[in-house]
Amino acid sequence: VSRAQYRGADRPLIGISEQMGAMRVSTEGSNGSTTHGSGNGNGDNGNGNGASRSVGRGMMRGRRELSQIMITRPQNILQKRGTHGNAIYLVTNYFRLEKKNDWKLCLYHVDFSPDEDRTFIRKKMMRQHKESLGDEYLFDGMQLYLPKKLANEVTELASKREEDDSVYQIKLKFIKELDGLDSQYLQIMNIILRRCLEYLGLTLLGRNYFNPKAETRDERHRIKIWPGYTTSIRQHENALLLNVDIAHKFLRTDTAYDAFKKGRNPRVDAPKVLLGCIVMTTYNDKTYRIDDIDWELSPKSKFPYKGGEITYMEYYEK
Image (cartoon, rainbow, N blue to C red; front, top):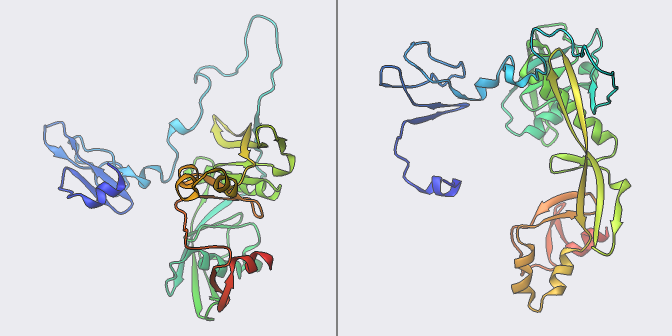
């Protein structure tokens, strides 16, 4: 059922129990009785009665499942080379990622005291320690990834929150050094890759990155085309491989204002065309979905700005 229906309906217990971070799904055990997984992310509850595997984040913690590692030859075949016929040379769009001998990826759990729930504030306070941590760190608000191990198992730092100068204690607790078989390892590799694409000046649209500087236009059909890339890093047998494919994004060159001008009755015709559409603001190449049209506002309407009020026209002029 839809989320709205689920929230509004009576939800009797039907054999599915939910817990924070994992879901327990009831199954018929081998003896015909209903059994449950433990729901703690460990898999089964060890009672031997056909207990179900728990479904949730816990299933993917630690080592990656074998299905995530691409196996392209039988285990008994030592090399992918034929014994008869003519040799041919092939080039693929897979690139081996070579790791430096002294490079590592260390995982730390981060606690803030007092608590701070806003992730962007946590990241701001963590940036105050670039000198001690270095520029090459990744922080998602809860976990910190470093290419080196700090001197102590537990490291304590102090930061100030900019908005009120409150002092926070930050505790970094070393968890482990990740290797190529850890589930988080590939996630971090893909995050680093996406940052590299951003540094190249590419623009994120949807899940892929495109190059607006290399666009081509077709004025007859009122579209422009951005070339881009789809990328993926995966474990292929004993190597990490980067796969790169070509992608293109087709963008209409007509504007939302054009849609208003086309209809005889904008209040009736414009919503039919615009609601649900994705639009892009060309001054920053960000995309938004149109959920509704506020007919009470105009470019001369005011909104709060830096302790006062300003019209939309004045804001964009400045």
